[in-house]
Image (cartoon, rainbow, N blue to C red):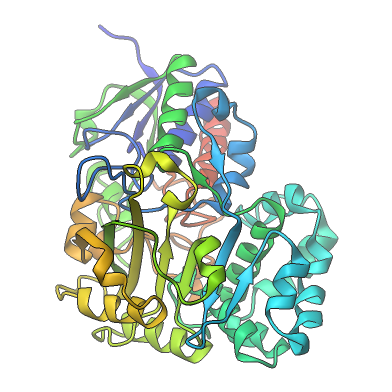
Length: 472
């Protein structure tokens, strides 16, 4: 009879793999079970359109990946992970052909916002520059577990991060700065009046200045493959094509760690209605393009940026987010786009390009947003449609089918609204533990939430380690 494992991880997304690595490096026996045929979860790369065009079905640009305290402590470069930085992390173009930019340089960023707001932007970010190593550890965690490493900086950040982005935007007078900050806050997939949306905007801005907004060479799959490679080197096992429907499907273990939605964990582990009140958020309509050339942006800055936000004013962005959250069809969507082939030639055949874009839509929406999305792109890049060789579209049903964690197409694994923004998955002191003493949750439904940073897995692994040490 096989000996009992120390830990079994269900789900090989970035958090599941990180949790497995953190436990294996402590000398525990670990096995990962993944329903899909490949590891990666939200960090995968596939040929979705034409041969030779490598697309990221979910996440593509990784400021919180390159800046992750968990990843920083791992030799992922030795396992093939190479970060590529675009000339500009972000461009936010306007219909007149100009653009606000989020550059590695604070000065270049401030000057793009206009003279009336340049000083306000410098004052906003100045207290936090040069402090990313400690600030990222203090922010990307459960705030009430342990003292912050840099209490003064953390407190200053909290005063700005807790309120809505709409309040943060009152520091600025012109549309450019307000539009760019609103676009950063929109990564929370919540109206700009939502609590803690200001913190999302500030975190992404600081990440650009401190660590950049890079893409992994070869695609997001490179992050997952590096984690999987190191896990195997540490003695861990990875099993793909293995769908887990109940705990009895898994080998005996002292701990079971779920990189799944909370409702899936409850169903599989027999916890019934433990997460019946957990709320899932809006979804996206995503399109991956194979193009004959680079996107013909009117704004020159957008041609140098890895990420481009389309939705010029904060009012436009808030309206698009509200429509998605309130269940209305998209009319003029806010778009988050990425053009990784500008800096990574492995993504497309020579001279060709890939392009990644999504707009927000209601959870479970079954419509087709291709037309409204391409109309918005054409506004800022006339002639874009002429470059399209092929497109692969995915609305909420397809997003959910690709990844069971994305309930109704919610790739954030939970709504970023109200108390759910900070109390994920429910009010509890240690959000990684459950009512079952051997069952733990490590997905993006736990703090610090969505993003390919592995920090939910990192913190969950620490909770598992403490429990196993206390119970030999």
